[in-house]
Image (cartoon, rainbow, N blue to C red; front, side, top):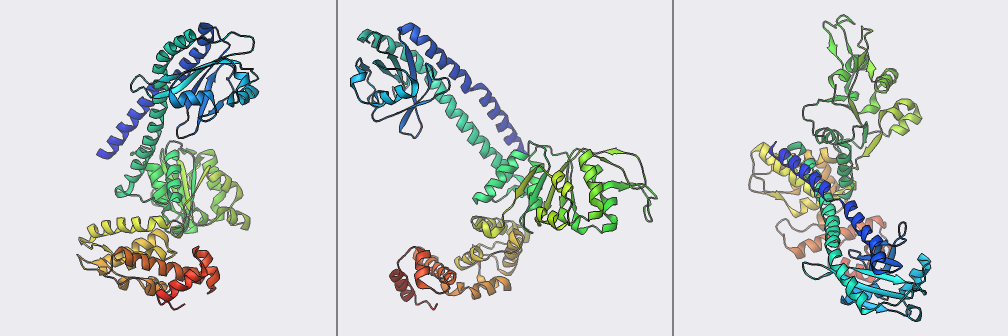
Length: 511
């Protein structure tokens, strides 16, 4: 609860900062200078350039006649780039005799430049160059003088204050956005015993989508193999919405007898059928103001789907044994390990219900497609299971970690949790877990894929031994994928065939 309060406080302060530092206000102020300068200086055109962060060009979004255009002047080969580089003002009254970027800019803007005056805009804090002011005259206008330079430099001093505020505002907006993302991750990680592992890009995308959906109460469909954590994602969407008091009602559609499905969802009145000795609310009513989570929605019997469709479409229904209409107010989150679109094609799921069931779909990738999560998940499970069993198993042997990362995990995260639980149970406190205590499935996989031969001895934790182990494993995998063809395996490893043969000989590998 204390963590949640800190998160809410941070979010309020971020919103306050974002409100106070509005880029639009500073843009309007700079545009005011653009309109005012030509009148003060008696010039035809004026542009203000900012340096692109990490780029090699100066960008002018502010200039006479640039309401819909942007000019990008290179730091090399342009007058404004020269001013930006050395911080010295430049007067050029014969631009038509000089090669440079200004000729291309004239083509873009349709303005014929002959005379220009450029001065740097310097930071009042450290005299660093923030940008450049350029004023221009065409062929028919007068020349620029040293007096004009002094006048524009004085204007630039005042403009630097607005300039720094503009740049600082953009930086604060960027930092605020990034900080808000970090806080969102903190919120998501606080769910479910304070941990949710998402090191892989695929799962980070899922978490990003969860953070968006927490504030948008649309219906969601979560698809993924068994054991990937579909219900956990559903609870995260619910809990991260910030409404702790609203209900979360889970229903596993695969576990409901077909004869009781209708009663389960819509409820019944006393005497509605044999055994109905009292009235009972249905799941739609129980989820009032909250979330109804339908796990394994693909298992819902066809016979009840039409009435279910009406309930979510009209947000109303009635209990068995009653004609009284009950209004429903809940958010629907569904989950399935099936491809519902395919089920529709097969006639196993109603098409109209499919299109009404959800607005946003989340696909949770299987664990074998996000191997970056295997090690952090394993370490997290180890910590929790140690606490559960009141043990102090110290960790995983290098050989075991290698095996865990190679195994395809058909049962996904659920299977990994079961495996770590077994390993902790069979390992004495104060020791590391070893391959020998793995389940038969993992040991058989290691034997079938020659992983044992490629693994270092259990007591070798040195970096060189681990490098040798990695090379052996990669060679075994490449040779297996290439069906024993050494030339093809060498290409997969991005080494020469001769180099592969040397490594096979050095490690005395039997392939």
